[in-house]
Amino acid sequence: MIYVYLGISLFIVLLFVILLRTFHFEPKAFPEMKKNHEFDQKFAIESLSKMIQFETISYPDPALENPKAFTDFRLFIKERFPHVFEKSTYSEHERAMLFHIKGEIAEDPYVFMSHYDVVPTNGVWDEEPFSGRINDQTVYGRGTLDTKSSLNAIMNAMEYLLSKGKVFKHDVYLAFGGDEEVYGKSAEAIVEYFKSHGIKPFMVLDEGGAIVKDQFPGVSEKAAVVGIAEKGFMNIKLVAKTKGGHASTPPKTTPITSLSMAVTKLNQSKAFKLKLTTPVKYLFESLAPHSKSFFIKMIFANLWLFLPIVKLIAKISGGEFLAMFKTTQAFTMSLGSEAMNVLPSEASIGINYRLMPGESSEMIVKKIKHIIRKYPIEVEVLEAHEASTISVIDDGYKSLTKAINQTWPEVIVSPYLMVATTDSRHYHAISERVFKFSPMDVSKDDLRKIHGVNEDITIDNIVAGVNFYINLFEQL
Image 1 (cartoon, one colour):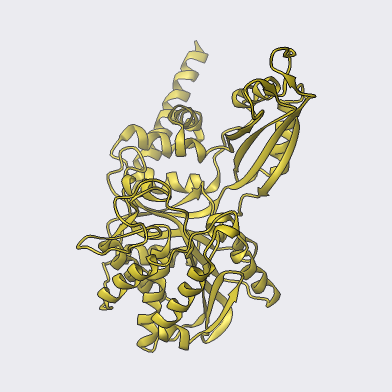
Image 2 (image 1 turned 90 degrees about the vertical axis):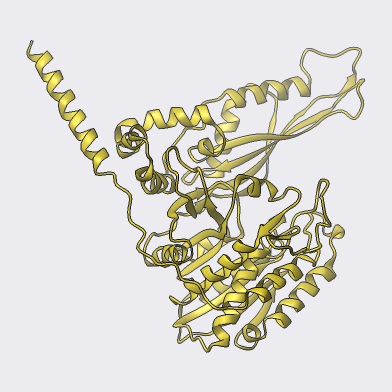
């Protein structure tokens, strides 16, 4: 009987702890007042429109590109923003533009990034993709969201402040890549330049998260999600070989059947475990207290107990929620015979992995080889970039949060894990504070336009983006 009483007592204590933690799981207030500035909005809107008209399309095959579009774009930027050009030292690295604006102190500089290359205009557009068309609500064209809008906001904000005699305490660098969409060398070249000159940025800000809605169950407020780390990526090719032959006399095992069994084995494997990383933990701690659902708040206030339930929800829901918890694998390409009646002498499958922080490409390759060890298949690593380090949450992040809430007082600011890839991944090697945030309020329809068709950005977002960077720059 004593064990029954003991069990009941433990249950009551556990329930008390769960409820106590839930009731103390309260959202933080947004203390900042909205702060707008009297910059030339028409000039900023027209600037972005003109930027869109340069067809700076990056291709994996450089022979398909138009070098003049990139050269003309760089010339336009220098002419369009004379105060920035006059007050800075300008240099080019591969296709990247780098402006160095000296402050009172050279140590602990700030770096603000974007890229001006865009992806091809695949699909059928309602209007000319590089028209830069302006109407009462939007600017239209490839690159408006990804991400000439950020570049435009940075340059307009800096031009505005420098024209008013702004002097920064620390040095400031504006770094704009020209080959981000094809994993090019521009950003890497700037990082190497910084390393060779002993430059270690205090903070780096690049594209990444944005202001989004419906990010968390029961949370009605919009959230500004700021990437503090990003997953790595690795491209693998599985190759199976035989002598080939005619399809009329097939052997029991062919390259195709071997690869099929290997893919099935990998797809069903449980080797890629779900893990709660620091950025995802911060996301839950920031957003979950705002949930109107007591059940949701109870779960996330007590992850020490309910984490298995959260992982189960992730498995069921899939998509980006699941991607935040694990290294993902996507089977993307397959090659075999070029004729229906010929057995291939070689066949291959391409797999894209997105690596969780704490899991290296070497670890994943070992898992792959172990899972498919029974099949006559070679594993080739085509490309690998490790997951980034996790940025420090301190004064740099606080200044970013302040600027966001001065521009959008009603939004929740939260760290998160980037599942996509940015140029700023290179900067983690030289800075402890690399953040990924695009200053725009976007819907799910807007997000589908990125790398899709009919890409456009609202006038409100263009204006708010400039206000955001002015609010951020004023703190420096």
